[in-house]
Image (cartoon, rainbow, N blue to C red; front, side, top):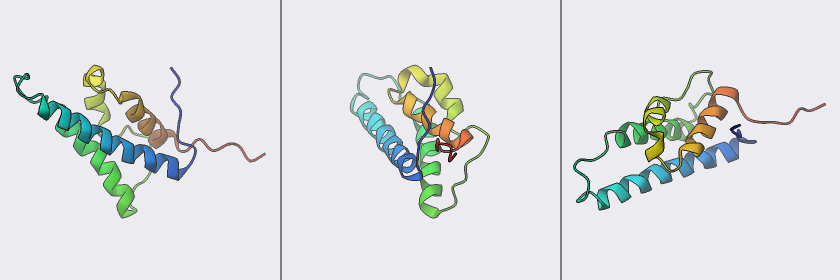
Length: 106
């Protein structure tokens, strides 16, 4: 499956905001179901922290695209089947690594 990259900085920022919302929502759902779970899934906190770091860097104006994977990708790869918004996170990472998908100006 080919991942789409954001076409603008605004779209990329919206994806990151959406990821912050989604991980918070997932955490809240799991907390609600805590009675049924033996323990809180260990992947939630590192995933949430990694996404929040990207968001905070954007807000602070210190975010930089890079060639390396974002910090949350190791966690995502190990627990992808439990993260309903894994495609969004992969698209964020793909945009981070390869930059915005801006059409050629020929």
